[in-house]
Image (cartoon, rainbow, N blue to C red; front, side, top):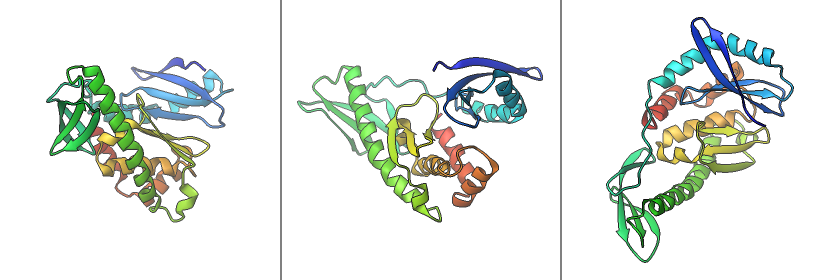
Length: 238
């Protein structure tokens, strides 16, 4: 279903947002790292009811937008040229391309080394690096899910029924109503404590699907320093 673009007035400020309709009973408002506003609403929610809800949360929306604005502009797109820096688990590595009859990517003494038969072709280098990131993300995220489950009093209650790693444009992650955990591939570039924040945040959604007071009580209980971790995530990944 196509997203609906709408806006509401808040004082002298116009809040633009998109509405994404899903088969759910409750409405949720999210402010993304690029300061855009997304409203996930039930299929039968009336536009007037959605706008009323956004107006009620307008002060919170503006606070979140101001928070994310301090990290803009975000890092420009990578060009996949030799010497360019790339992040992995919060550390910077320089990209090194090597002529080889094999296609391999590996970490070696501060470098992400790409071996390929066509090191001058940046699209090939990008494809290989992206594949390497996805593979590392799948392994590392699965490991961190197991670690972070132990934060909860009854870990099996919060165990996701699946883990999906995908390149996302805005969100760091989400938890589906069926308890499937979706994580942004880019998270593999972040420090472990920031990755743990996102995973723990999403695991809390297994029992608390909305950002209610109960959700934040649970998050604060299992991860007391979550705000520090969130700020580090946004600062490093800006």
